[in-house]
Length: 419
Image (cartoon, rainbow, N blue to C red):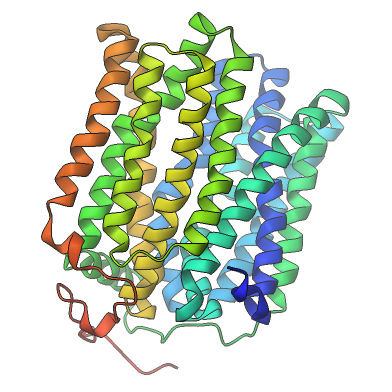
């Protein structure tokens, strides 16, 4: 399980990302209270939250193309420095009492742009650092550290906001980006894929073409998008409402959230040690653990049942993501890993806000219970339908990119020597 940590390059990357993950979990809560203290308007809070998501949606495909075209260490280092500057400036404005809504929105747009370049590139970097034989363990370790850092940061963020204000939490997040950049700076400068020919538009279309001609991958992308929109997003919107109306309020939702985080930790250990022969099938079967949570919220059941359902949901999330990421890293040629990842990410990123935006009106029209029941049913039916796709069953652990049955590797027409 810990074998990837023996590799110096991956160990440095892992330490930097563990530090950064802690900071990432501080900022959402801190920014929420910063905006509410500044204007008191939930509409303004929604604008700031959207400003963090919008550049990621718009620029993720570009980020994937850049991550496959230029040295990945350099792309990620620059992205970390951009986010350090944006969050650092945000912290200064909050700590000096000079923050305004428009300034926070602009700085969050800049930080989101950095994330759009960093996230898909990181998947390609892990593939080159950890080595083929350690990919799943490496992805599991990264997920474990994120879950553990999230649990620790949630309590820390609440204490910082209550005792010294949200500006200090954002300042700590800024410093964690600087720490991540420092670890990336110590990686070998040669962590770059073969550079494709053509410009960025050609790189983006080439990456989309690689996904399109692999039925297992675009099927997986559709599954991610549909379940994000219809299953997961309504839970995030309607879950707090159900807890407030029927379960005693915030403590109940907090207990479910803690269960979700604990499940994420458990999922990290499971995915690190389990090597299913058909990883896509295993990931889809694990996703069925998501269905009990919306079904129990629809009743609504007691917290003593909902908290274990949260554990199951958190576990499936990590196992599903680790197996998906590892399958992409193993079954695509390295020069396409970041671009293929950006396509699957885009499906989730677009679907999630659509689902969140529609969940409230749908609950107002149909009622909260039918919307949540629909989510549970869709989780089962969409997953069952995906399992009927033959290409899903052909993906095996350790499949070589040059022999994938549904996607033989052909050099792109625009391929050119590394310059």
